Image (cartoon, one colour):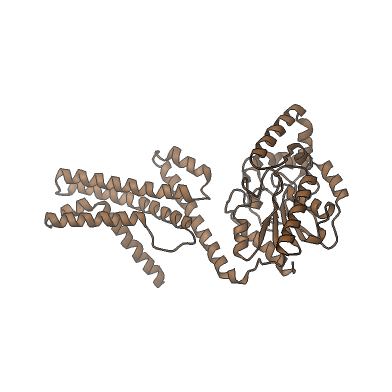
Length: 450
């Protein structure tokens, strides 16, 4: 209770400082003091106002980004609180005070200028540092920021989203700080993260988001697969095999624990079974991997004219070569995800004894739960394959000794998409903390002795 009272008093004092410094001209005019005193008071007020706008809070935050974001939220909140108060005070000054006309006009102009700078100081900080705000609310803020009533709703939504982001990230930081010395993710063997199709984990298109940092803060040693963004499973499997040997020989770690997303799970299985990496792999955890393939993909590829397919493939391959891929093959990569190709792959790629296989999956509950293009493909995949994450059916994700569906035991209308599972959009989702999800996976591997 004492802490709440202290915070209330501090907040009230800060509010009074903002109010007085916004209307210092009026107060100096109303108070009986010599001109020199009024000038000194004015200079002090301006100095205080500048300080409050540069540094709204002296609290220490987990990062500079969070500090800027939280201060931006505070500035916008003070803007919302002070707007009606300053308006009423200005009306009183203009209608009922004995100040000369120039002082009334001057005070109103100073107040409007201060409020404008308070708003822009806050909104620029929020726009440039918030991750959760996304494009949608940024655009709405720009388009409708000048429409009365509507702009109030949008501003409040922006503040609410950004404030919740700071609270969530601060709690995450404190949790990791408390358990850091326990190194709950420090496994016997290092973690090898293997990306899926159309993305990379070096230079460009790194889609692992905030996951690696969260794992490393909890003691994990992380490496990346570094295979092509789009090539056949066989080609990527060969690259992964070379990468695993490189890690083992350079570090002396003996084995690695592989966590692979999407097509990366097939690439990893290929490296283990077809390229002799079983002695160097302790575990394979696949995330939303289409082990039995996609019926939808096969149907779509067979319907698209060959000329159109080749045109898309050639354009993609040329682009990815410029971005770092050595030998991208769009066509083979996509066809290897079809149901018929995966069936043939599974027949030729049995699990190897001595390697622990497990799989994890998720599903969307409605199309609106995913970002483009997953919101578009969800219904198509559902028609051909059943419940899915926007790309891969739940049935196809099942592989190994253990399968877990992350949103099986809780009902959340949004669902978890293919991209959500690797923090593609860096979005904080109610009920599903993707970073903690990976921390739990790696901690469990540690507990199993891997």
